[in-house]
Length: 302
Image (cartoon, rainbow, N blue to C red; front, side, top):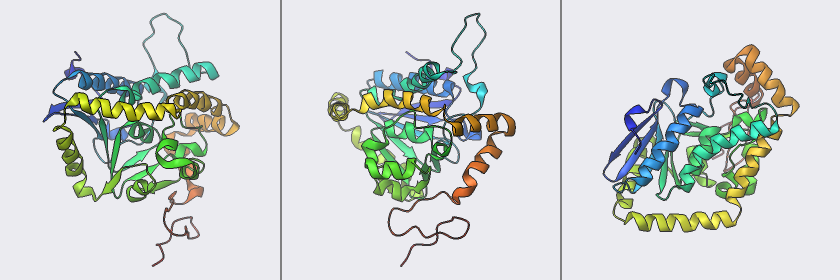
């Protein structure tokens, strides 16, 4: 049994046959550090083992769900125990470290009980990886969904986009790093549905109420057969390939340069320089993408 009182980066609460897990680094916009995802993994297996729990709700504290992976090098540092350990340099070592993250997050897929991602504010980069491992995604209409780091940092180290959004919208968003609103995320299949922000919590809780009416073993059986079907379509194999592909993408000239820029100029300046040419960085699902001189979307046509 996990001692939930020891968690530093998440909040864990069981109530009314659901476990609510909250990413709790609001000052860092719930950036996904190794310590956070390892705590998340432990909490998810705890919820899966707890017979009172019928589902898990995953959400973020503060202004958004998650701004993505933690770019601060310190989040990967480990105590010096005299053992020569991997540094992430080289494709194999990089892949190993990406897979370490991946195993933690993939618990949402592998656990028996269903999970609901409750998305408000920004859900970017690694935040989208985490959300798409959940069984159901419900978003606020005004949420911002996308993967901007793909403009110069690499490729998705987890890759469930294809299975939710199809090949064309996956390519449209991942080849540009552009983002979509919560409403549009639901239109392309990233989310099951979007609702006005003030209804987000009640919508998620209402679905959890309905899960609570069903035998948890039946919930497991019906989740797992769907996931097995996706595995027959290559979903699990693609995750391993995604980690290797991201490690190779880290060797590109653009990625090598951006990591130098991060070290020399800091995260904020480096990201601002990357995103400036893309204007507001938004894509539109319905209607033409008309933009002003600064690259910002103009209002939709009547």
